[in-house]
Length: 255
Image (tube, rainbow, N blue to C red):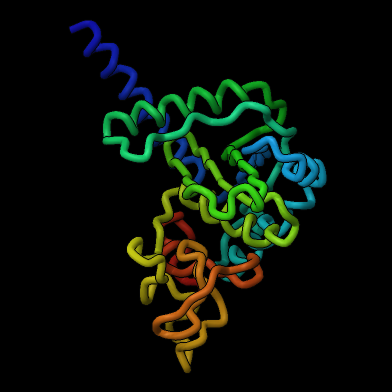
């Protein structure tokens, strides 16, 4: 009975913290400080050399993207997101087992939150959201695992490529997972990754409908034809659609 009581108290504390994080992070009265922590996901010299080139300017496109979209939705703040670049971490986050069930996933989530607190607990500047970006040498891993963003703890784990030609796509994935931490849902079909109509289209009312000129962030892909789509290569090609805006508590009358 004591073990059950302790577990219930832990779950209650987690639920309360999650609610507080959700309320605070979606008021949009001041910038959300997003800390980006680079991590080498392999031992490749190419990965290390790439990480050495990163700085705060590497992630400014994310700030500019959210500022642009905030203006389209008449948000009260003109700077909804402000990224902060952190020093490289040499510890990798715990991995979730591929076939993990609900209980194992819950334990993994707690482990991830503890790990994130341990490696970033001494930050001197405020951190509302923490994005841990694991960079891979594309010569060693041409396909990376699926990235994720957790509302519990406001933590993102992004799998990215360590090559300058992928900078734009990496930032799209970071922004996508960032919105997952704030409660936004995917807008694509998990069976084939095709954007769902209408919420996954950059402009579902566009005439002619194809090719779409923009991609919706939570779909991540731009429709070229009814049966053809392509990955957004930079945030210049991406918008936040009305369905996503509602999920993150942006004003309903915007784009």
